[in-house]
Image (cartoon, rainbow, N blue to C red; front, side):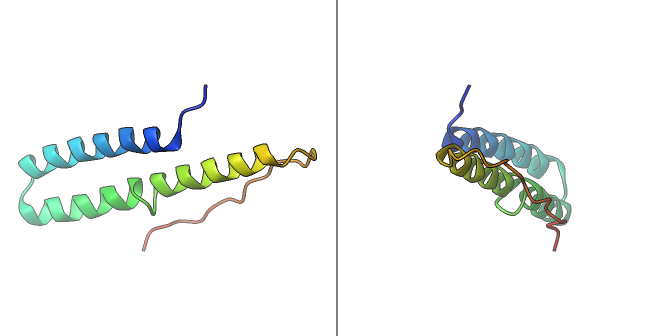
Length: 81
């Protein structure tokens, strides 16, 4: 089953927004800001969302390459700043 990247990212964003809303209502402002930064780093464009976009792009490129080359991925390092 193929899920369009845009649909997957929309589902991810909806979950991130829900978690942020709950955290905002539960944490003091300074803790919420720190939590928000961490959550967006881990699940945003520099984290899971970026990983999904990369995987999707690699998969599309692999699908277009029909010469039988083995598909390999490069291990990513830590993306924390």
